[in-house]
Image (cartoon, rainbow, N blue to C red; front, top):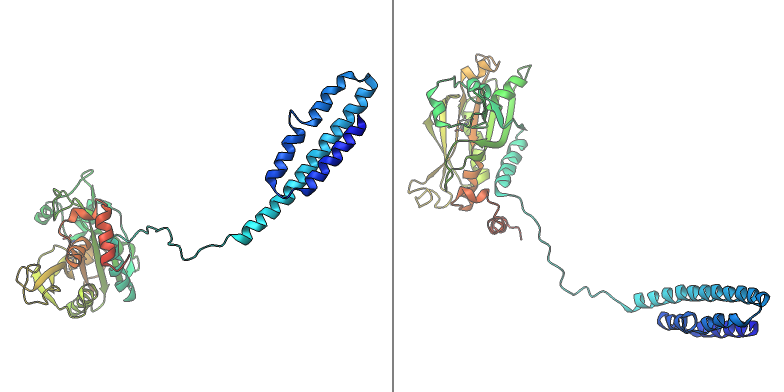
Length: 348
Ligand code: DAH
């Protein structure tokens, strides 16, 4: 019987040597090591042997099984390696096939406007600063020359949290905070973008949450001419090189004089159309020379320093620039709106 084992071993070895595929190799495994295979039938014949013979034959049978398994395993590895190499040789990548389309996000229109304004002012040496959205009445109103009971407070219907704390109604409190934080009372050039809140009922032109961008310059000898020149650059950057600006007297408690700024209509060039309601001008922001009370209350000597400030609404600018008719479309995150907008900007 031992003789039979040796013949079997030789037979298996020959077969394995001649095998050229992993599939055929697997068939050999099943044929010889399977339940109906010769190794199994040899082991069932063991019953007729004496105890001594059984011991010896059993050991040889186990050795055979181990050797066959090792033989199969090493051949398998060899064949797998060969098959992989062959596949790599054969398969090529067709680079002319169309690729899977990637969807890429775009910058939100409001962020775009804020980025544009920031970039312009940073290029002119301004710092970008931010303030809290949950604000003290002190900064939102009092330090801006709006004491408690001032009638102008009524124009900014506010979300109060306590008597002294509210959601800021404007970015102007960042003016007060910046002046206060400047301990050495050095000149200031800042731009302050951020979210603001008012108790308005939402409709096509009102939103209880919106954005503002505040500007503040404080230095010696700052005049209205500096404000005008700055606003002109702003208008041309945002609406085109050919634009002109027009200043109209207005009222804000924190500026004196206060000015409302119009830009010549970028749709009709100033002739009069539906966008500018036939006037040729479109209002874009509020501004003025910083009120002496505001300078004084925030630690700057109004005899030595003057300043200008302005506040604009990026929603309004974006609506004008891109012909958006409903302010709510900025906040509902409708992808059709956002994608349209990205296309306007030259994105894909
Ligand atoms: N804070 C004002 C508002 O919300 C806008 C404004 C007007 C800001 C004039 C200014 C300014 O800095 O000088 O209506």
